[in-house]
Amino acid sequence: MKKIMIFAGTTEGRELCEKLSGCGFDCTVSVATEYGAALLPKADNITILQGRLDCGEMSDLFLQKKYDLVVDATHPFATEVSKEIRKACDRTKIRYLRLARNTDGTNDISTDSNLNGENCFSDISTAADWLESLSGKIFVSTGSKELPELCAKITDKSRLFVRVLPSVESLKICETCGILRSQIIAMQGPFSEKMNEIQFEESGAKILLTKESGKIGGYFEKIEAAKKLGMKIAVIENPEKAQHTPDNTVIQEKNACESEVFHTVGEICDIIRQLQ
Image (cartoon, rainbow, N blue to C red):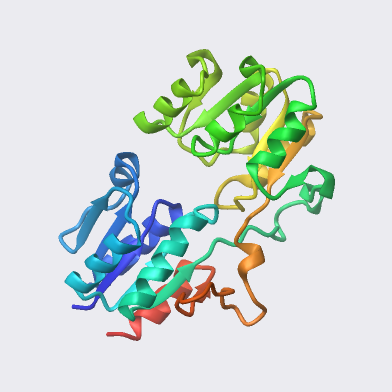
């Protein structure tokens, strides 16, 4: 039985795990949190690892378990994690496949969802500077990870209405950042356009802060709902786009392994089935 290591924590990662295990592959799936682990499918040929790993820990694990290949299905904004995975694959000479989320628009989404450049930002810090210069409540849908950096620049925390995953870790981060319970929506997405519209309106927010997370992440539904309500919109751009070359590889750092980049679970499954 071929052994596959999957770094998940995304919808795509869960789907890939389910399909590969169903095809008889021995899958080890790594997620950062208890919440992420609880969402994974359960089967005799699925081993779930919970907790964050650095390059050294990954390398030791790869050598010990002798995986046939590694699939990086982490979130497009988890760039540091992807760097660690690639370095570990380079050290251990294990084939690395990247399941990269396509965050571009699709034909079934209105092209009116494209934003003007002045509201797009490369990172949370520059977006926070822009938000601090404005007035009005802010609906924060970027998750809990970047919340400390955002809160460090927003003087009046009462302006923030935050939507995060319903996990202990997320709620602790909110508490540490001084976000009151009345300012938190703890729900698992993605959300429909109507649900977004209801939550935006109920919060009284005049500004939306979101990530360019693509169709799977419910990005376009958020944008359409915010536009209907006349909200200003700040988007953190997908950092992974700048790393891709025209031949579908990833721009490499020094000593990093060559990356094969795919955008659908089906593509990854077709490659892995060739191992059988």
